Length: 408
Image (tube, rainbow, N blue to C red; front, side):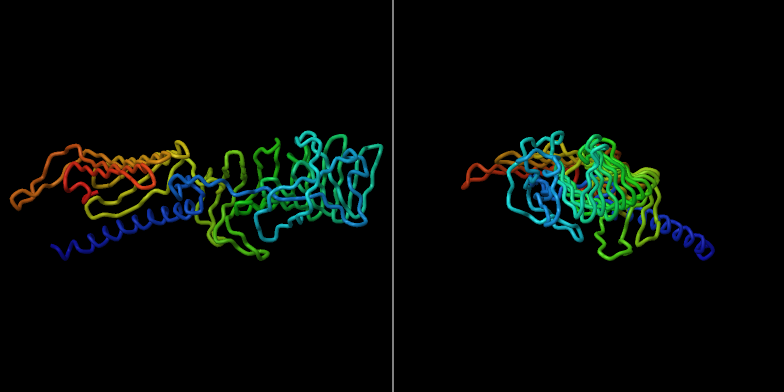
């Protein structure tokens, strides 16, 4: 009888393991995404990390090359009102042109974006008085409200505050992001506009490419069509990144530190492996953000297949809470929670779980099944730095039974 049932048992075992491998492959893809900060929120790299964000503003100064004309001589800014504003040194990024630091110049009379002066330099300039349009060609460089535009040719309409740039266009944002394009039309102090054939390199690392891009309000999100994103900083032309996300529409929202996709495909070395109609992930600028963490996946002979989804809540810079569940195919689910709180001179950490399940107890050398009951654990750790010499602390561990932690 055993020999007759052997093929069927082997077939069932292979079916179970193939199913587990498929589940493991899906979680591997999710882990790859979340490990690079893509699908789920970041888990804090260091508890209570108070480090500030990386300085993103690019330094720039007012530069007029020999043989060129500045905007001051054309009446774009008042005499004596200098357009140069010094800022912090730029973060290094490969193949990103950076204007060299120059001697500090006097600050402009008005520093608001609405009254920001324009500094323009080029090999040749023409000024049409009738249309109030200035056309610059040859190594054009335009600076306004912290943004730096370079191109082969730029036309600037003083009446409508519209800038049209063509040929090898490079736009440096105050945030440190750099945009490359073939043609750009910008308005509202170069804060809004439309771009063709866009490539964006983020100050925090990562790269966008898109057929078109548009920003409809100052410092608002950039909406890109037929676009892609990758954290890989590929150096060579045509180099295939290790992984990337391609979508019909990609929205980069710097205010919310988020990147959103519609009809997205996840590619590994240029091969599509996963599709989703919608996807959103942090842009990597912040270290702590509320959201789902990478789920855990495990196989246990007693519990079966175990999945552990978790949600991280960034309550405050010194407090956070992580809640989740341990979902097993052979046992009742287990609720999980962890709370951390740091004070000026002290910190506490609470870690607990709870479930309602049965167990097997050993009585007089025999295994005796027990009825279902409430089971769980609670760990509490605390520390208080009284002064530089004395420190007090506590370490409490409580479990419902001696088998609970061994089982779960």
